Length: 225
Image 1: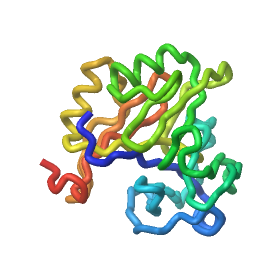
Image 2: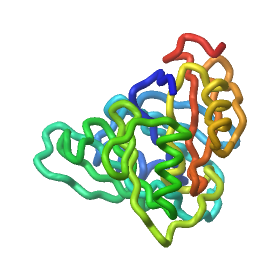
Image 3: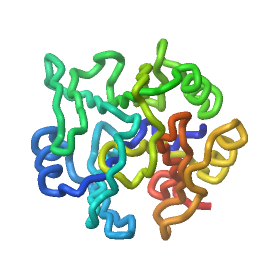
Image 4: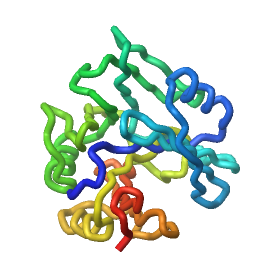
């Protein structure tokens, strides 16, 4: 893919705005960027995270009772740490703070539990065409996506549900990349659409149904054409 940004973004949904703000801003130390509106009573609170954006999507209405997605653990490199810190946010999402360079993570890492590791290698290597980074990990620039075999994993349902729900890959041409992913055997989650003059985006899904946003953001690409 022709990347417009050399790292991924991470999105989660919550109904607990204050508790989650206190945790992610004060305990983790993420800096607030700005507010975006997704519609249907969902506000996206964007935070800086080593070049990545942490998208805290706060829903006005009660989120559906869906099982957790395959995205099980977020790792963030933090200057000044001498050892890892294992934390859990108010909604039960796992986050690990590590000294930069730990397990090759200089920005962020996201870990998935998957039903079929062979299928995931095929997806990341051949469908998304990402760069391999060891036995069970791939790179999007400085971000690391890793996975492990989890026999208890189930197919992810709706992306509008509590917890880590999607990652975002920023590209220069969303329609082109979306079509190419489908042509290589990827599953469509949502066809490309436009948010005003801000972004053109779509969703594809991995072999376990986890959601991956393909985003063309005007702030990065200069145009949505």
